[in-house]
Image (cartoon, rainbow, N blue to C red; front, side, top):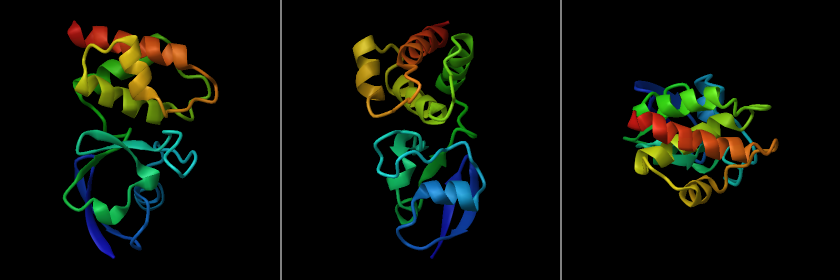
Length: 153
């Protein structure tokens, strides 16, 4: 099946079988490897991208469901919230191994886009389901709070 996919502001023509997860189109066909494969069942968050501005798990989002949608990956995210999150991540040295971080960042951007002043409870609720094997959760939470402050400045 052929589908036109708008990804990071550019339209791509993609040939994929129905039922192909967006993750594999992004990584294998379009060669954007920032979005990671973690579990394949939408439980870890490593594959998080934005579809029409909302965070989704690309391992369980099928290519045929995306006609007319705008997809943004870690390579293309550039909103004010994204810039604040990226700055805070660097300032607070959040990353340890880094494998989960693109998904963590995409979810954090989604949170701050919806709620620019989240509480700790808001952060914990929203980020639930984004797994970090290195357990940098406290630094992730602190970075989201810092990004919220940066957005205010």
